[in-house]
Image (tube, rainbow over all chains, first blue to last red; front, side):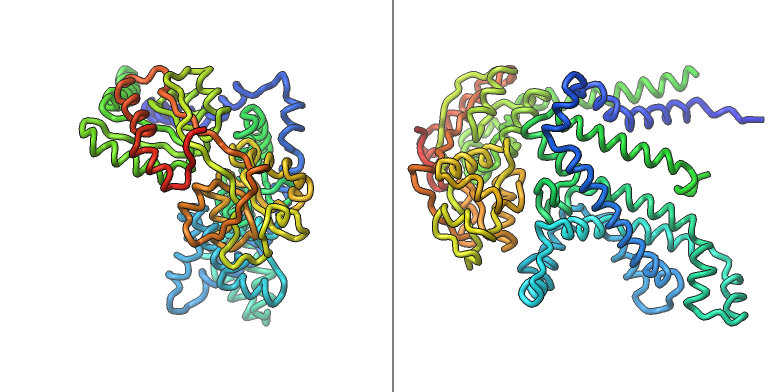
Length: 260
Length: 254
């Protein structure tokens, strides 16, 4: 027997759905369909899209590689300042990305606190490079996989890990063969959210890495620049981003977002 | 069911009345859309104007002239438009239309470098030296187009474009990349250098290849307060306005 939803809730939900969908629908309505091909080539869509995919995947890989261990430390570690560390890790979600970009600039820029040393001693410059775009994107999107994985770790039944350890498994073995498989769904959901956030990253990237086609100009930056020259092209680029994001999110569906 | 509709109607009504009341409240407030290069000068002119006209409050919206022009076309909320380019003003003049259009200032291009000049820039030709990290405003942004024009006149465009590491949204963003020491050189307006002070070093671009940008100002058609808009425009082209613009690095109208 299915309960009928109260009409008030349905009405408010419709309002919410309309609000979210309206801009996307408007993009489709206003897209210059009659000169789609021209608009596509004019704004360098394929270069920007390829760069966006590369940067977002690299940022996701780095986020998982260091974010999952970080989540483990936050979930299992017993040390003073742990809640402070968690707040710091979550900070990039709350901060305006441009603030993150400025922070990265004074930290890792050519004349930044650490960046000065990187530049003078090792000849490494991150600003205006694809690596810099990955750094900025990782900074903004990593907290999502950390939070999701930490929540997963906290929900685990510790007896499995204790049993594995009692049977002689080393800490590393238990983490790899017991803990990690058990948090895989949350980790995967977090990784998808991280990737989605990385694909949309704009503020930190343009502030820290600049905006150059083929090097640091990801899709959001290309949309931003196209507005100046070709508003129709900006709409086409936006639509591509919408289509790519929706396709991936729908394809992964409930399986990876943890909502079955 | 009836209750639901009542709530929905209430919500819609609340939304509508919110917009209309803010629209009518704007009758005593003047909205001026101005190119971001005018920020420092217009804020001073605005406070001088407010002091002389206690009945009128002036609100500024600074941004790239191209962006402002498209905002005016889609939203139509500006009473006065001061543009860094004739092109952006032309767009507004054709839709929704302008009145009393006049050029009120000029701006030259200059090269800016960090104070310690890491790449050794002493002329526009140095911008084409291999390895110089050059930052320009993007194509379509007036100062970005003017910079490309100057580089073309100097016969340096293709070599200099090899050195471009970032296309920024406006002149202020170009200056930011220079003051932070990330890039070696940028091309901005003389007025930007007046604002940035000693956080940047400037190198002049010879008159022969320099681009002199003319700044037009006009009352936007459909402004509900043409009179107040006109008196602001007069403040800008008047003696005090022109003196403020001169202090901010602008030249007189050509």
